[in-house]
Every structure is written in structure tokens, then in C-alpha cells.
Image (cartoon, rainbow, N blue to C red; front, side):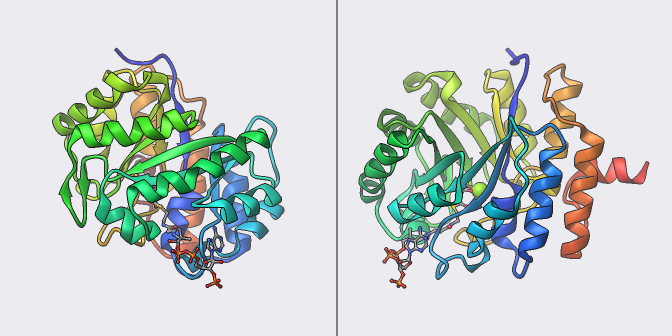
Amino acid sequence: SFPKQVNIVEVGPRDGLQNELSVSTADKVALVDQLSATGLRHIETSAFVSPKWVPQMADSADVFQQITRVPGVTYTALTPNLKGLELAIAAGADEIAVFASASEGFSQQNINCSIAESLKRFEPVLRIANENGIAVRGYLSCVTDCPYDGPTLPAQTAQIANALYQMGCYEISLGDTIGKATPLRFAAMLEACMNDLPLQALAVHCHNTWGQALANIYQSLLMGVSTIDASVAGLGGCPYAPGASGNVATEDVVYLCEQSGIQTGIDLDKLADVGAAICQRLGKQPNSNAALAILAA
Ligand code: HMG
Ligand code: MG
């Protein structure tokens, strides 16, 4: 049955802007600061990854330095290795996220190593993060489909998700990286994960490439999942997942939840304005039906 409330993890400044060339540091800071005023409590602010791989995130330290932190909001950073962790700690990230893949093909393309190597690489990252009192989230990509290897078996996804959880990640964000899943397959994957991990430790991260993100999120809510990743104005994608479009729009998730009696704590009108502002800077329309409806009203 539905949760009473959900925690929405806003990933627009990271997942969204990692895919956009030439967004100024000032515009990134403005986006994070505006998001901080909407009621969101988790904002993935940036990524400390190799600037050779993803130059769009090269100014992460500046972004962290220049944002205005609102008490009660957790500002998180993506970190693939110890170097990323050091930079994230120096920048004052409240929380970090490591990221693995449920499929070998995407692991190689995205982080240049096998799944097993990545898990080994995360061990010291988790240890040192914990020593520094920094909570660690774990992303798992390609939970149902991989752009290189095809479909992923639910048992495979559950196994890697559990490995991340056992290692100390407090939450595993299950990523449909290429937005290909439909609710029945997504449910089978979730069921496998729920057999091995506590429900409270599971989050969903749905890209909307095939227009199925909201359907998969609705399915997840029915199964009791209460942490949903989303990106304002539907910004995003992944540079190493060809053709993948943005995450589900945060505005659409807020509308769905509030209309279903599930509290989000987020001011939808304010959020739509924030999405419109960043889209204006990017020269595009918000990729959110709810936002377009609000802006047209
Ligand atoms: P590598 O080339 O195997 O690693 O990359 P390396 O250790 O040889 O490092 C190469 C160079 O990068 C070196 O510099 C390092 O110092 C530097 P050089 O000596 O050549 O001058 N370097 C770093 N610099 C800054 N910060 C760091 C860092 N690490 C190394 N942390 C590596 C391996 C993992 C570093 C690379 O593959 C990488 O950065 N990958 C990240 C790719 C990425 O950001 N993808 C998008 C995010 S994941 C995603 O979007 C999916 C998600 O949304 C969920 C979903 O939708 O499924 C989370
Ligand atoms: Mg993503």
C-alpha cells in the first residue's frame, strides 16, 4: 500500500546538468539555491568525478562553496572513488553517493572497471566516509536494462543491491538508466530486491526515455517504496547511456503524490518556477507536463 509521505531526492543539479554543456557556475548555484526554497530536503548538488570524463561537473567544488545552505536540507555529491570522496569532504558535502551498475557493459563504459572491481573500490570510500560521519547512498544503474548488455535479471540486480547495502550504503537507488522498464518488469525487479533488502533502504531512479517513468514510480509507490529520485523540469540523462533522456520530472512526481494523498512537503508552484528558470537559461522548454500545465494556467 501507499506510503503516507515520500522523500523526493532532487537530482537535477547533478543528473540534469551533467548532460548540459556550458552551464555557468553561477547558474548551477542559482538552481541549487532556488531548489532549497521549495521544501525539498535532499538535493544532489554535484559530482566529484574525473573532469576528463565529465567536464560538465568540473566546477563542483565552486558550486558547493557558493551555495547558501538551508538548515534541514542535505546537499549530496556523487563520488566514484577515494579521490572523489576527498574532494567531497573538502567541499563540505553532507552526504555522498557511490555508483555501481547491475550490468558489466555499463560498468565498463561509465566507471571503466568491472562490477567486482567497483565494489572493491567502494570499500575504503565507505569506511572513510563513515569515519567522517558522512552517510553514503548507493546507486545501482541498469536495474532492468543495459544499453550494452540488454535485459538485466532481477536476481542479478538484487545481488548487487544487497552487496552495496551490506557494505554500508544506507539506501540503494535503483536506476532505470535508459528508461526502458514497464511496470510489470519493474515490479519483478523490485520484488527481488525486497526479498533481500529492507523496503526502507530502497529508492527508485527512473529516467523517462520511453515515457514509463511515472508508471514505474506509481508501481513502486503501490509496493511501499517511499524514496523517489527526480529531476526538476525532467533535466538529465547520462553521458555513458546513449540516447537516454532525463529523469522523471520532479513536478510530475509531486503532482502524482499529492493527488494520491502522499505528502511530499514540496511547493509545486515554486518548483515549476525553478524549472522554468533553469530551462530559460538552457534555451529549452521544461520536460514536465505538470510544469507546462501550471505555467500555462
Ligand atoms: P579512470 O580513467 O579509469 O581512472 O576513470 P583514473 O584513476 O586512471 O583517473 C583518470 C584521471 O582522472 C586522473 O587524472 C585522475 O587523477 C582523475 P590524470 O592523472 O590523468 O591527470 N580522477 C579524478 N579527478 C577528479 N575527481 C575524481 C577523479 N578520479 C580520477 N573523483 C573514473 C575512472 C571512475 C574516475 C571515471 O570513469 C569517472 O570519473 N567516471 C564517472 C562517469 C560519470 O560521472 N557518469 C555519470 C554519473 S553516473 C549516472 O549518471 C547514473 C546515475 O544517475 C544512476 C542511473 O541513472 O542509472 C547515478
Ligand atoms: Mg541517472
